[in-house]
Length: 133
View: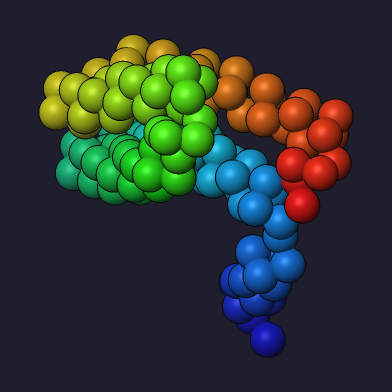
């Protein structure tokens, strides 16, 4: 079995067995991976390949951030959910601007924010095992 197939099978199994809290953590990881790959695209010499890599990975990161935003329960989550909605909206705007202008700086801003929120989420999961389930 090719290594790529093994990796896909592993990822599928990980998603199927993950708790809701772990799934959110996986979304953060996916967004961060795509942001990093988009940033790496700026070093590619071939203009066409560079633009394609940046665009494709920023679109994937945006889709993940939209999924995180859509998972918020604005009624039950109160002020926290409203604040997170606005933060995700800001991230989406920065990723859109970065893609349109092919500017790495807004991507770096989103990367820092995602890293901080992911870290807080991971801490919450380890400190509150009930939330991880």
